Length: 336
Image 1 (cartoon, rainbow, N blue to C red):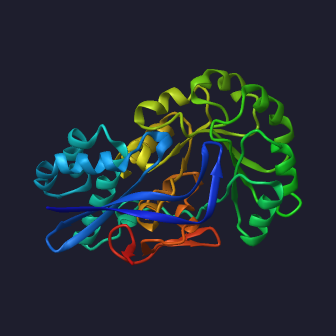
Image 2: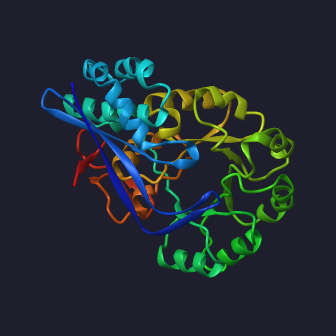
Image 3: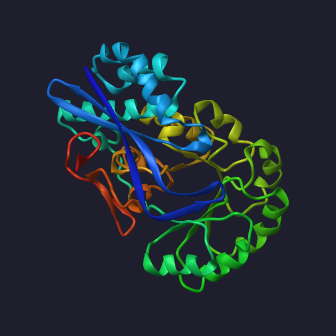
């Protein structure tokens, strides 16, 4: 197998702010796997608050290039088993290779991975469109400029109820609220009752993961589901989240790709947890990989490519919030 990789800077349409900081661009590592005349692609984004450094990831590939090139792709499951001992310590990089493996497998076998993974399942779920932090006026202007069936609203503890109440003057669309660990336990407690009447889909990681046990005290009384994000990276975290959360947010880069994501979905279902599929700032390469799992989840937050000024691929995308899949083999995209 031939392996190539490159780092691209993804430019956002504008500055994007969450509780963990502001940014207007992200570096992304694009992995290419070529075998028998076909090429598959995967992506890993540099997210500093997860400790991801693309220079380190590039060096990891270089250090293991001979091993990685020596793997022959016969099936996605087999490919992941071969990758895991080499790249398991770098889940973002493992995800890029795992997803590229699925893409390559679909192209080699001339089938869509969507059909390969979901042969008997059809489901149309709306993805949210994310509104970053800013003034309340900024929030309302962004919503007015982007009519959408569902929104994800970033929060940080300042004027939260006032912000949500103001949003309700311009749209009644369901809202997913995401403080990114930015709330205190007391702040969360004070908002549960007033938010319960404002058509809130879920609260994503409202308080810091280090105090999840406190969240468990509110789980049963909350009318709004709690969904773990920073508290849930991989399969080992799913059981622990059951005590404090109603559901988990799976992101392919956090867990290591499509293969472990499928394992997490199966475990979550065994435990009666709802499942959300989310994303980082990613191009259509990474978003397309996550879109393969939409038929198996309950909530979708895959707007990463819609926030970019320089997407890297085209193909499967969202129209009025609903996934429209292309007929392209593999993960359903073509490079630009």
